[in-house]
Image (cartoon, rainbow, N blue to C red; front, top):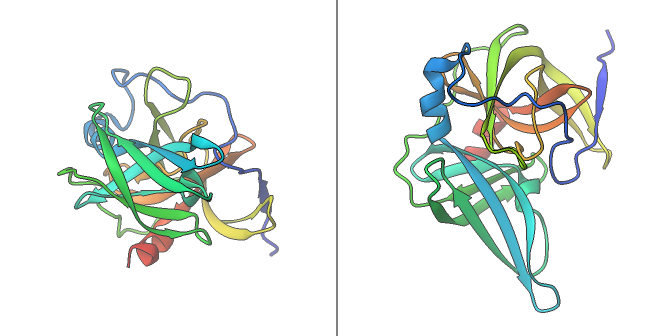
Length: 219
């Protein structure tokens, strides 16, 4: 059977889709996981300073803490530019940390950053994912007062996607709605464990880098 292919438009951030964010105090399936999830999710802002352009924001996205002061985000959030890179990482308690870029791999769209944080971070899931599994995304959507907590289900565990650059990659496809600025945020299961890193959205669906790719990058 020929797999259906999704075509994604992803330049720097997610495509805007209808808002799936709601305030933290509302009732929902993942209520028990929200306290931990929000504490392990950050805002990532990347600045570049050059002699010709001065200092400008290169990208704003979401970060996913994985323990020992380490966090993951998308490589496209950090960007690629000439000049000096500076990264601000804002935790849920509104503390701004200086971030140090440790590693970046644009082929898998992942970046690893270190901050001074004692947060436990998300545990990486070791269980098999499947279509219909309930999942949640967490992030700091641009232009909204509240962090976003969007629930949904996995639609496909290995959706083949084509970027506008022509690059192909295999994604977890979910119907959990993502919002502009959620790039690099966590996709978690109903036990609060990490099953993927959000990367893009199109046609009312969101797409995440599978946990296997995340493990390979971290190792």
